[in-house]
Image (cartoon, rainbow, N blue to C red):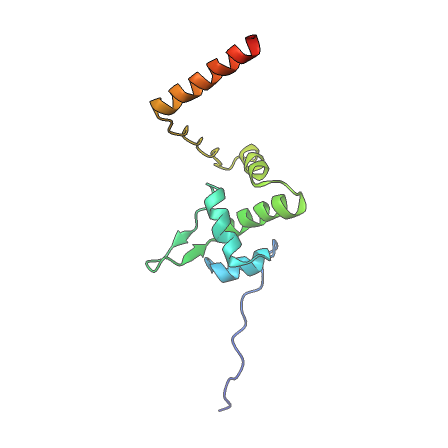
Length: 130
């Protein structure tokens, strides 16, 4: 019996161009989106609605709907030239759960520093008034 040397045929891609598989590792997802894997990891930090499942060993597993979401983000950023903030807003309009980033806490200023600032402002007011 002859040896089988070729790999078995994979399932054809679906109509949207995403292969018919339940999960994709980060390298596969990156290839489908035509970006590097580190870009996908960065997008996860910027887009709240992008949260792939992780295995016990912390490998990311993207579902086909995650890939569609990634392609939408890529389209907004690379083709429509949105900023990250603009893309977040557009995704919110489209019904994705994109919360605005939390505001930065005010800088900690000591009471002594506030007194010095106040004194400096009072000195400036006196100079201008003279």
